[in-house]
Amino acid sequence: MLPRPVILIHDLGGSPQDWDRWGLVAHLVRQGGLDPRLIRRFEYGYVRHGTVPRYDAQGDLIQIARRLSDDSAAPGGEACQVDALAAESRALGGPGKVSIVAVGAGGIIARYYLSRRTADALGTRYNGNVDKVILVGTPNRGARLGSVAGDFRKMWWARVFPPSRSKAALNEICRGFETLRERVLAEMPGESCPPISPRALGLLQISEKSFLLRYLNRAECTPKDVRFWCLAGQITVQFLVPTRLARVSVEMHFGDLLTMLPSATTIPGTRPVPIVFRNGYCVDRTRPTGADDPLDWFGGDLPPFAHTRLMQQPEVQRTIRDILTQD
Image 1: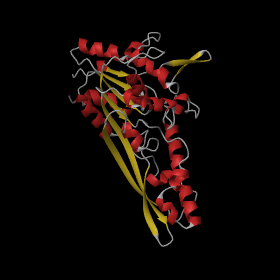
Image 2: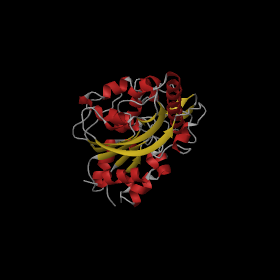
Image 3: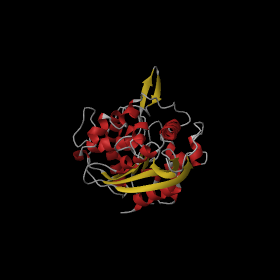
Image 4: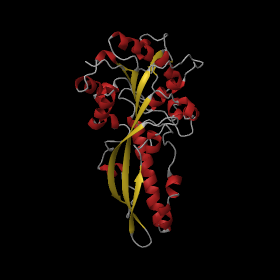
C-alpha cells in the first residue's frame, strides 16, 4: 500500500459520506493502492440549532478552515488536522506532506487555510505540511449566482437579431441557464441535509464579489511551494438562433453550470495545472416557445460534467488518482 496522506474536503451543503457515495475512496484504495489509514474525510463540524447540534455545511468557511489547523474543542477533530496527518504519515514510512482534494467551496476552505502563514484570530495557521492541492470545480474567482441576462445581451451576436425574436431567444436562454444553476444548487445537499439557503454565509462567501475571495486572490496569499491542479467542467452549447437574414450558430460556454471555466482554472499567485472535462450540445432556438425545460438541451438530465456530477465520472476519478500517486 502507498502511504500517501490525503484529506478530502467536500462541497457546500454536502457531507463526508459524499466521497464514499461517489466511490472515490474505494477507487483510490483499489486502483491507486493508497493506504486507507491515511485517507481522511474532512468534517465541517457542528453548530447548535436550538438544543440540537447541526452539521455546519453552509456556515462560515473561515471558521470551518480552522479544523485543518487545530480544533481541539471538537471530539475527533484531530482527524482533520493537516499537521497531525503529516506526522502519522511519517510514522508509517510515508511523506511528511499532505495532499488535499477539494470540491467546490471545499477548495476555498483549503485556500484560506494555506493563506495563513501567521495565525488569524481563530488560531488558524499553515505550517508548510501540504504538497499537492487538487481543486474540482472550485470557484476561485467566484460562482455565478446572479442574473446572467445582462452578460448575454452584451454579446456581439445579440445586435444582429430582429428586435422581437432577439428578445425572446435571449430571454429563453437566460432563463434556461438560471434554472439549470438552481437545479445544481438544489442537488448539492445530501439526502438528509436541508436545502442550501440563499442567505447561507458559505454561499455568499463564494459569490463573485465576496470579501473572502478578494482576500484570497491577492498573489501573496498562495504559497509558492504547493502544487495546484484545477479540474473543471466546461459545458458548451451551440444555439441555432434567428437573424435578419438566416439562422446562425452561436457557441456559448456555461462552465459546469455553477463555476465558469476562468474561475475554476485560475489562482492568482500561482500557475495551476488546468484539466478540463468537456460536454458539447446543439440546441435549436429559432422557434422559442418559452415553455421548454432547459434539461431538454442535454437530453433530459444534467450533463456528466455539471458541478454536482463531476466527482461521479470515472475520468475525473482516474485523473485524481494519477495526480496523487505520481511523485
